[in-house]
Length: 287
Image (cartoon, rainbow, N blue to C red):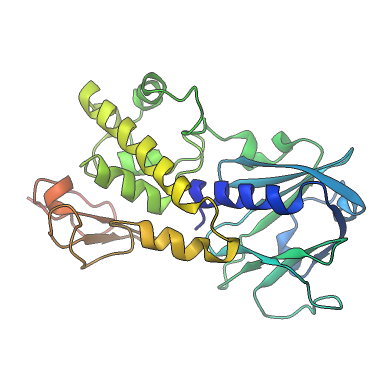
């Protein structure tokens, strides 16, 4: 799933390639992709893109005197930039193409989604806060006012495991499964530690790991073409998706805990005092 660093890089890429240019056509291919109907999708056609913004994992294209075209790429969605779009409208079918946006220059982009679980979402709204997912977002962890005290306040009454708290978009916006693993590895913290039980020293360590991990990921992604961002993300991950590989810090084997619809990766030596976590739902430390 694209997370904050990749979506931030896409925002920068689209700012360079879209702002000041006119959208001439928006073509939905998958019926399920469009989540709003008023204003209609055609309301952005014939309008200049005046800005691109990011809200958590949402991308927002602002149009001149018109609505916002907002996208959430979900787990398996992606944006593919085309210097020259194919001639003729796309044909509906069983392929991954979900929506196409064409500019007056002949350039544009396709939104695609792999797999059978179609969760990619597109909204046309007058105000981004009309999108339920944006309205419920917590603070952005890279915002200037997101300091250590704010993180401590957010976690103070959290009765969940720290892994789940970091992934909760209503608590902190933009962090998903991959970067929560990376942050916790950098902080040398068990994913199952209770958030409310963090000491001030642990909160400080977590804050530093969070800001450093996300900032470095954004820096790696900036300037990378949209089509290469997935590969860039994977190459920069130290533990997530690397089950069985040696930890880059201590050399221990990266372990995994699997759930019904996701998994997490961690290093026992760095994060759990050498104790492996039970690989089952509702896991707890093996005794």
